[in-house]
Amino acid sequence: MRKLMMLGSAMALLGAMTPAERARGRYMRGPEGHPENKSAAELAAETKSLVEKKFDEVKAIAERAVAMAEKGEKMTPEDKAKADEALTTANEVKGLFQKLEQKVAQRDAEQTGPTTAGERFVADDGFKSFAEQTRPRGRAIVDVKDITSLTTDAAGSAGALINSDRRGLQVELPQRRLTIRALLAQGNTESNQIEYEREKLFTNNAAPVPEGQPKPQSELQFEDATANVRTIAHWMRTSVQVLADAPALRSIIDQRLRYGLAYAEEQQLLNGSGTGQNLLGLVTAATAYAPAGGLSADNPVDTVLLMILQAHLAEYPPNGIVLNPIDWFAILKQKDGQGRYLIGEPQSVATPTLWGLPVVPTQAMGVDKALVGAFNLAAQIFDRQDATVEVSTEDGDNFTRNKVTIRAEERLALAHYRPQAIIYGDLGRVA
Image 1 (cartoon, rainbow, N blue to C red):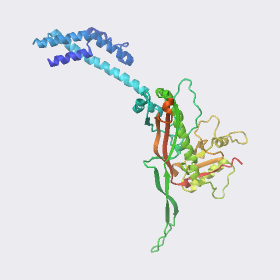
Image 2 (cartoon, helix red, strand yellow; image 1 turned 180 degrees about the vertical axis):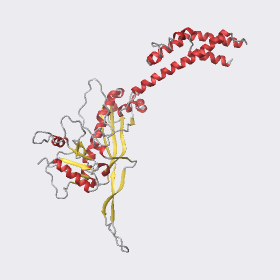
Image 3 (cartoon, rainbow, N blue to C red; image 1 turned 90 degrees about the horizontal axis):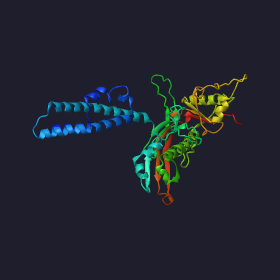
Image 4 (cartoon, rainbow, N blue to C red; image 1 turned 60 degrees about the vertical axis):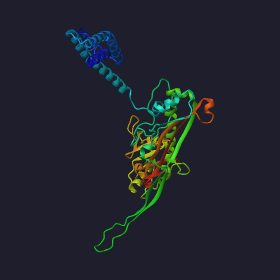
C-alpha cells in the first residue's frame, strides 16, 4: 500500500502523458518543440501547463489504486498499464526539468562576469540588511579587496583600475592612468611595520692565493631598515536615500572613492617624502644620476641611456623607465633632417619603449625628470589592508539631516631594498 501511495504522489507531482501525446512529440520532439530550441521561460511555462493538465487524471489513478489496496483488491491490467505509463512520463518530465535547469545555468553563466568593488558592496548581505532599515543607524563595513592601480600597458600588469561599465549617456570626469604599482614587487603583511636588513657595503677582496698563505678577508655590512604602514583614506557625505539606489552608490564607490585612493597611492609610491605619515617614495629613495666614464648626454634620449648604464654598472639591469607625458611626447616628436620621426611612426601602435625598456608615462612624475631602474628588485609594496568601504549614519548631524557618510581607506607600506637599483635625475630638456 505504501508503494501505491508513493506512486500516487509521484504521479500527482510530475504528471502523465498519453501515448498519442508522446507520439506527436508535442513537448519532447520536433524542431518546434525541442527543449533546446526554447528559452528557460518557455520551458517553465510548458512544464507547468503539462503538470496542471494531467493532475486530475493522475489524481484519479492514484485514488483508485489506494482504494483498491485498502479493500485488498488487485489492480487490473489496464490500471497497471496506466501506472506504468505515468512512471515513464515522470522520467520524461524529469528530463524536461533537467533541460530547464541547463537553460537557467547557461543564462547565469553568460551573465556572470568580473564584478566591481561597488557591485560587491551593494550585494553584501550585511549592507543589504543595513540599507533595508527604515532609518539606518550604525555602520556597514565591506572589504572589497581589489584596490589596485595596475594597468594593461605596464610590465607585470593585472588589469585596469576601474572595470568598463557603459550606461546610456553617463559622462565621467577625466581620470589619470595609474601605473607605478605595476612596476613593483607585491606583498602582504599583518603588522603595522616592516623590519628588514638592507645591504650597506660589500668589500670584495677575493683574489688568487698562493698555497699555504692566508686568505684575504672581505666585508659585508648590513643596516637595519623599517617601512611603516601608512593609511590612505577619504570620505564623502550624501543623501541617505542613496542606500536604496544601488547604481548610484556603485558609481560613487568605483568612480570616486576607489580612484581617489589609487590616485593618492601613486603619488605616495613615486614622490612620498617619508616624513610624517608619508611613504618613502621611489624618487626620494633613488640614487642620483651621475654619468659614468666621463660620458655626457647631448639630448634627453642620451640621458636615459646613461641612466640605464648607471643601473647596469650597479649590477641591477633596469626593467622600466618612468617619464612625464610631456617629456615622452617631446622625445616622440623628434625628427631627422628630412622630417622623418626618429622614434616610431604616427600609425604605430607598439608599446612605448626606449632602448628596449618599457616607458611608463605618468603625470605623477615631474616635468624634465626621469626615473630608471630595476623596480621589481629595488622596492616592494606590502598591503596591510586592501580598500575597505564603510557606511555610517551616526556621524555628526547625519541622523537629523538624512545624510550618510561613506568612507574608503587602505593601508600599505613601501620597503626599499636596493636604492642603487633606481636612478633619478634631470633630462636636461628644460633650461
